[in-house]
Image 1 (cartoon, rainbow, N blue to C red):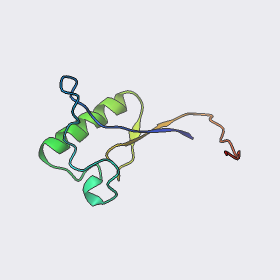
Image 2: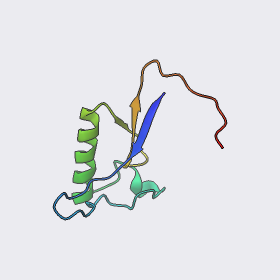
Image 3: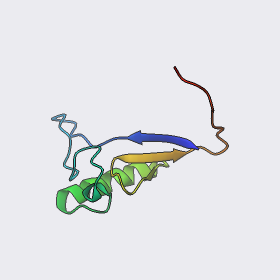
Image 4: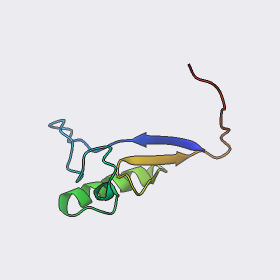
Length: 81
């Protein structure tokens, strides 16, 4: 159990998203974390290092998806309306 977050990198000066190789939520092999070259690969690796340093792990089929495991977390089984 844990939490998940979807994110990308942004240039703090311009506010523009950095090149990651595919748009967010592209569910195809080019979006797999390892399937990038050049600047996109560099940026994916930078994102991965930053997230790993905070304890997150990447879902390798989505460069934008990171998971944080919470030890002892209890799942809830409730109806949400």
